[in-house]
Length: 153
Image 1 (cartoon, rainbow, N blue to C red):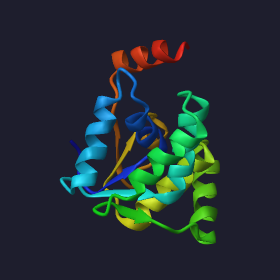
Image 2 (cartoon, helix red, strand yellow):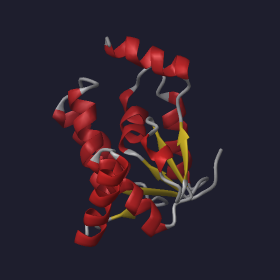
Image 3 (tube, helix red, strand yellow):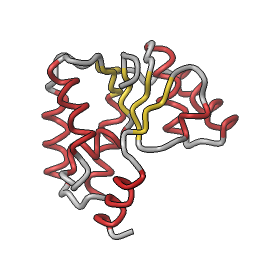
Image 4 (cartoon, rainbow, N blue to C red):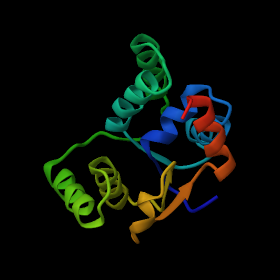
């Protein structure tokens, strides 16, 4: 494991709740965050993204995805990042443009910096381009293959 605190990227949150053959790694991080074993930062905005992924990629109904995200929100030991301030979003877009990464990734990176996250837990390597924190891609190559096969890609 890398250094704490961890910022959870949207894909980790969605995967943890999706019940796929490779969800256990993501779920273990979520469980550790919920119990306070690790220090975790989760932007509320990422729950909206996780809901979208659960319903559009993993096939959950909107009702089930909503219930899962609302239960996750009940975790009191997680540091929930509530803001979507203009400066944070603007700086996130600057990062996204400069590094040629998705706007959401630029936003999450900026939140990680502002909130003092040492590591971003993620499913993609876009955060590797940023020197302000470390990146932990939680799935191995074979786990990605298994996930893609499960999803029919």
